[in-house]
Length: 277
Ligand SMILES: Cc1cc2nc3c(=O)[nH]c(=O)nc-3n(C[C@H](O)[C@H](O)[C@H](O)COP(=O)(O)OP(=O)(O)OC[C@H]3O[C@@H](n4cnc5c(N)ncnc54)[C@H](O)[C@@H]3O)c2cc1C
Image (spheres, rainbow, N blue to C red):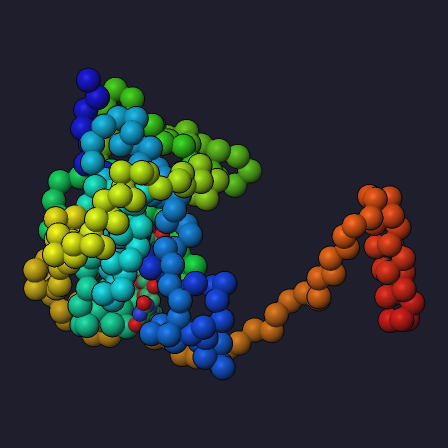
């Protein structure tokens, strides 16, 4: 019989980059107005967590730090088959840099308890530093596998294939460990019927939410508020600059044979060159 593993997956809610809502004129994000989504890189981490559960047995806990609406992504994780979610939410976390974020998440993980493997995304689409996973591994004193694109457990040991410059590397580690999952891993599968049904039921009976999603604050996890938020963040954003969009307009050609389409594209390119000259 498969050994049941305690699998954690770290997920972050990020602004939806496909939406113009919540973008200030200077290009910065107004997080309160921005449409929100599960960090696209975390979808691969979620898939790795669910695959590990399906193949080797166990349960998956999704952990997130963010304002109260971040519960939306934990519900999305439940729909995909995650067993429970934990949201760290506290006003004192506002303006946390990666150091403070990793500290707060480390305290959350310690509060949640035993784990065999922690999956993180490679990076986020907003902060984009790729620092949180490795910082968590350091704080938890865990071996870490970064840029992982295949993960298996054999004879109680983790075996992983990771991307390196110009090739791949095969590594083995004792459990527990932390893994950051590359976006060359398998895409996230469809939501599970059982998970989607559970979330539907929660929508009708919100008083049952606590059965599946626990919300914690800094006091509950025993984190030092001095090490969180602005006070705990040595990074200072000196300035932000809006960079111009690169590239020209895209023209769609439809409704002709491939030969005609190619001739048309060449003709237009030649015309453009003539006009520029
Ligand atoms: C001075 C300063 C002030 C900031 N103020 C704010 C602010 O007020 N509000 C704000 O939202 N951001 C703020 N940020 C950005 C915030 O620090 C980063 O978004 C955060 O530290 C995570 O870093 P990242 O997004 O680069 O994640 P990465 O390191 O790129 O993420 C890698 C992986 O770590 C995990 N992970 C990352 N963040 C989380 C999370 N929150 N919960 C669960 N898992 C996670 C995910 O698995 C993710 O794929 C601020 C940054 C600075 C420098």
